[in-house]
Length: 390
Image (cartoon, rainbow, N blue to C red; front, side):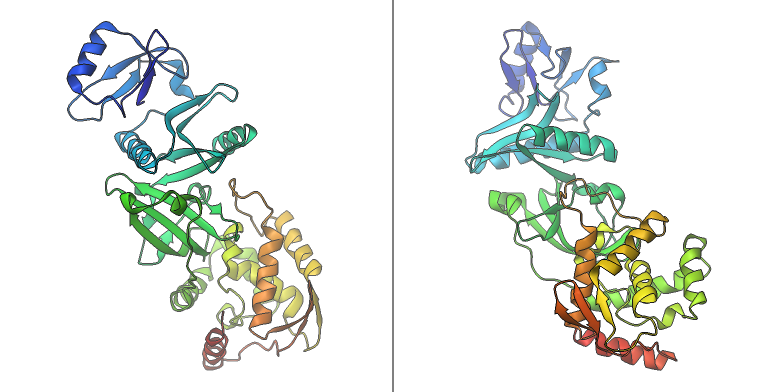
C-alpha cells in the first residue's frame, strides 16, 4: 500500500511524502494503521522496492486484497500523478466504508465520480463482478485498467486473449469496444480496440500506444477509436483454423453436423466465419456459430426465401442451451450482446448482397446459396465476397 493512517487519523501518502529522512523520523515516533482494516502496518523504506506500507505477517486484511507487486504499486502511483497533472482532485487508495472496498485511485470529472482499478494479477469473474457492482451501487463508475505485462501480443495486430482479458472490455457511447491497459515500466498507455475474435483465445485488434504523459483525461474516458478490419490477416488465419477443426474432439458435434449435410468445411461459403465486432460476446468461434445459422436457414435454400431475425435468434438460443454455443462473460458490458451480434451478422450479409433487407428484422435471400464444388470456385467466391466487405 502507498497510504496509511496515523493514530491521530491523519492520512500519510507516500505519493506526496517521498523524503527518506522525513519518513525515517516519522517511523521512529509514529504507528501506522491500514485504512481498510485498521490493523497496524509497517513502513518499508528499502532500496530495491518502492517505499510502501505492508501488513504484518498473517494479517486477515490480505484475504480480500492480494499482496501488491512492485509493478502494481508503481503503476497506480504513476497513474495517480498523471491524474493530478490533469488538474483533478485525486485520492490514492480510497476506501469506501459502505461497500467495504478500496479503490486504487478515485477522482471526479464533469460531475461524475470515477475510480481506477489497476489490475495486474488474475482475479475470478465473481470477484470482478462483485467489485464492479459495489462501485456502481454508490454511483461510482469503475475504470478497470489491465496491467500491460498481461498482454500476450502475437503479431502486429494479433493477440491471445483469455477470459480474464475480456473482463476489461469497455463500451463507449457509440457502442464501440476497447480494452484499456497500462505498463508502468515503459510508462505507456495501451488501448486495444476493434477486437475481432477468431477462436476462443485468438483475436485481431488495433493497438493504440501512447506515452502516458501525452495523454489527456478525455483519452481515457472518451477514447477515439479508428475504423479497422483485418480482412487479409483474417482470411489467412480462418483457413488455418479450418485445418485445426478436422479430427478435433473439441468440435466433434460441429463436424458431425457438417458431414450430415454433406458439407466440406473448406468449402463453406465466404460469408460463414466473417469478422464481426460483436463476436467477442460469443466464446464459440465465429466460423462455428455462423455455420449453425447457415445450415438451419440458408443451406440449399432458394433466392427469395424469407429470413427473420427471431428464427435465427431462436436457433442460437437452442444451440446455447444444448452447450454447442458458449457466450462470453463481459461484466463491464451492461446490455445483452447476443441479439446485437446476430443483427450485426444479418446486416453485414445485407450490405454484401447475400441478403436483401425488407424491414427491421426481416430479410430475404438475394443470392444463390450454392456451395463451391472445388477449391478454385471457393477461392473466387471468397475473393469476390471480401472485395465488397465493409
